[in-house]
Image (tube, rainbow, N blue to C red; front, side, top):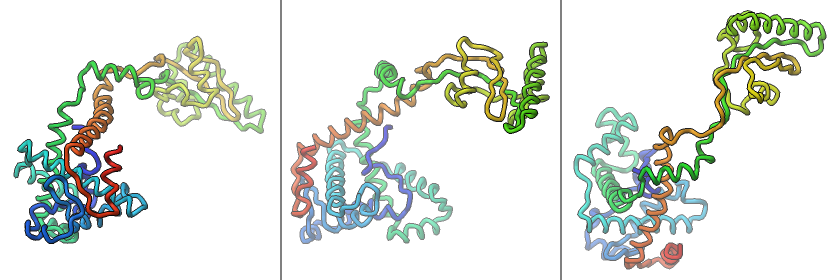
Length: 338
């Protein structure tokens, strides 16, 4: 399933975050709601001050809150409004989390935080002012909302092979381009740049190595005998190298045009390099079959974000939303405008 938006994706990196994820639905009585200050109403659902402040206490420390407290309150209010709309949609669809799904989610939290015993679990919840019932209630709401979004959005995303192939052609230069490659072996002879005799010795040894190669001695054997590079014990094998990975002079020798199995030695400031180049592969693209699932995920995220925005906008358009707190009243209008 594609990535959930921030207000429904629950990574729960710290148990303390769970204090901010609790819904107050079912906690206060209807009579209590009548006398409690109401921040906003979404059709017949209320966002009470206690619910809002409980969520805000955690939201304000999250990355999406930003540095402006008033803007953070507006952002949170919009999240809460979206949640109420999805809760209402869940009721319309008769969608709900099962007890088994809730228990599975709770067990996942325990494993995630290495809470082996019930006592450890209860203590961890206690530090966040939570009980097991609090956690289960949150899990039930989260799973229910995920089901609504999955049913109304994710299940309707167009992810056919034809769609994926079109997107592959459109984005392959950006995502799946593969540079020219070659399998490379190397013999390195080092010398002291300030000592002409040392340089002459290096040149002489490179010529000896070339003579042995010309006589048919395997490159790996010659490399083990002559090379002073790090790959000596591997017979000089560097493995597959992409064009552009080596320094310019070495890269030009390895990827010479026309291709050469044994290009001329390359002289650097304090070393001479002799290469064995095989299995050259032209630049191209990773094949569609290889990247299909990666592409599906990328398209899914982009398309999901678009569809989710359209979906929430429609739910808001069809709903009666009233903000009672003056400082936050502009939040609903801002959301409508976007």
